[in-house]
Image (tube, rainbow, N blue to C red; front, side, top):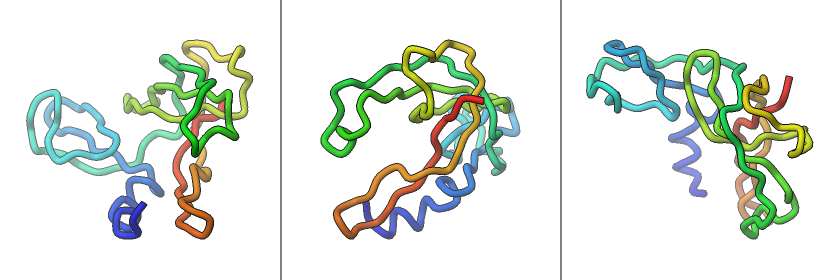
Length: 129
């Protein structure tokens, strides 16, 4: 990952910023300038809710090379209390114990490191509450 990209995306990644449409109220993560529901440009920035629930998930048993040490792991689509939906890794839970509607919270954790001495990427992961 390029340093310029990390710098550009720092507010989204480190503050969990979303955009909310002033026309229809839909939230977007990552933030957008145009609403995909109503097409308006009346967007405001804010912080995403910290808690939500699992909508669906998949357990990864054959992973890409950068994540082979983590298998099996779960990737979930979660809906936050403010209506924002996102895809993230679901951690600290046995994959057999995951259920639709499971309450979660977002935590800020290491995602991966690029190269032996490269940039460490941090982001959100969902944790059961």
